[in-house]
Amino acid sequence: MKNMEKLQLWLLLFTGLLGAMAQEDLQEQVLIFPKESQDAYVILNTKNTDPLHNFTVCLRYFTDLTRAYSLFSYATRSRDNEILLYKSKPGELSLYVGGEEVIFKVPENTGTSSGWEHICASWESATGIAELWVNWIPLPRKGLRKGYSVSALGMIVLGQEQDSFGGGFDAKQSFVGEIADVYMWNHAPLCAGMRAVSPSSRLDPTILAWGSLQYQIKGYVVLKPMLA
Ligand SMILES: *[C@@H]1O[C@H](CO)[C@@H](O)[C@H](O)[C@H]1NC(C)=O
Ligand SMILES: [Ca+2]
Image 1 (cartoon, rainbow, N blue to C red):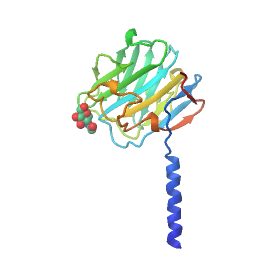
Image 2 (image 1 turned 90 degrees about the horizontal axis):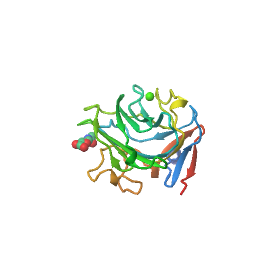
Image 3 (image 1 turned 90 degrees about the vertical axis):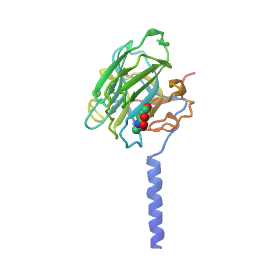
Image 4 (image 1 turned 135 degrees about the horizontal axis):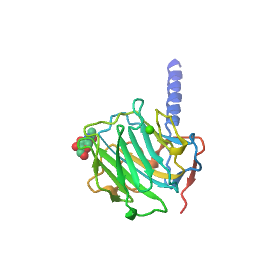
């Protein structure tokens, strides 16, 4: 009987753990950040516990902001801009790795100045080479932080730009609009190119996948079906 009780307790703990780790399929759903604030954001949880030597981050967004805003903020306890995708102004997109920045000039012919924008950013430690793809079109590659490795156990925040671990937000850098299809892999884009990276792609996302996301909504952020 004693053992039975123990088993039941373990089962209880185990199912409780499963509940806390529940993953949700957000296909066809978007996160709406309806208004400017410094307290509306979404935390994305990952099980990754290894330093990153390579990564690829992809997402889609829809906004009419013309001021600066953050698209993807990964901070560690020791460095706020460990990985950051930051739109400083129209026509420019910055990628930070380990606190260092490269600026990509985004030509207008990459597509949709009105409408959803799809971006993928990747970085490879061995060469430091960073790629930015806008609407599946690659921009001239740049390099930074050769030999660096991105610390594990970062905090991933959508909607706000972290200036400290999970905080230090500024309303004037907040995202207002819609975000969907966030993916992160622990490898550089596959040889086939970023075209292979799409929501329907069969690649196994090792860090984040929109189709099985663990997330926490903080403040005024709304999950809604995508508009056709
Ligand atoms: C990172 O990518 C390079 C080449 O793209 C590869 O040789 C290396 O093994 C990768 N490192 C890890 C830790 O996956
Ligand atoms: Ca920051």
